[in-house]
Length: 90
Image (tube, rainbow, N blue to C red; front, top):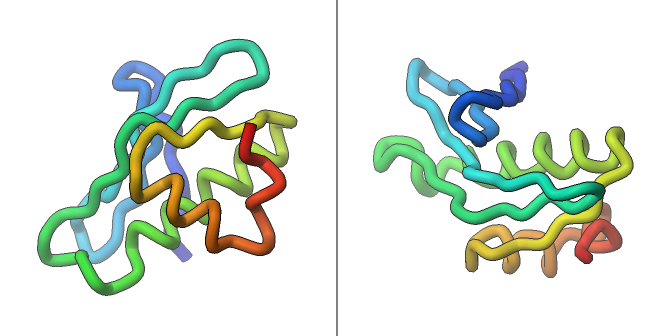
């Protein structure tokens, strides 16, 4: 299973699959996690990699008691579609 890495120095969550890294740029302010941008390498697009990354980010946010404010259109759409995590949207 791929593990979520919180790259604090770059302010982004990362997940490696097949040697390639998908990431979500973020900002943290108090109990709010702002997701500014989500991206996967072209070779991973359409494989569900960004969705798996978002699942891991949302799980991490829930464990930390954070609310998510999606700035990125992909993150916003993913959270709207997610029955499990849409309650995290600030």
